[in-house]
Length: 140
Image (cartoon, rainbow, N blue to C red; front, side):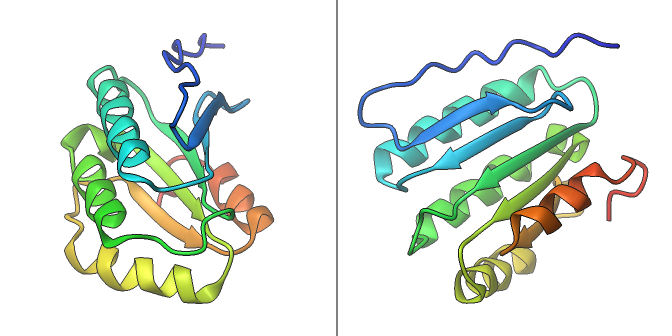
């Protein structure tokens, strides 16, 4: 089995997310706020990880603690996940209700290029995990 690459993430005061390595080698990122500081920190962290992206990866973004998602956060996610290196990523985004899920879909799917990560929005953690666990050649 291939060793997971280093995480290069450490908790910081004022940053509203945590990162752990998933058993499948991907990352699980849990957001507790989407302040400007959090969005900027996540942006820089995510881009740093894309620079060394060398294999197919399964990531999970847990936004269930978030009650409102600023448009700035969605546009930052579009920027990061539109990087050509993101095509190696399957990303499940879990939110706490259908209203948030639909708001993200409306903006995100309208502008994301084909070269982006394979992304799906969920309101159920179990459904997200089932989708992530599918064979990587079934990315859609």
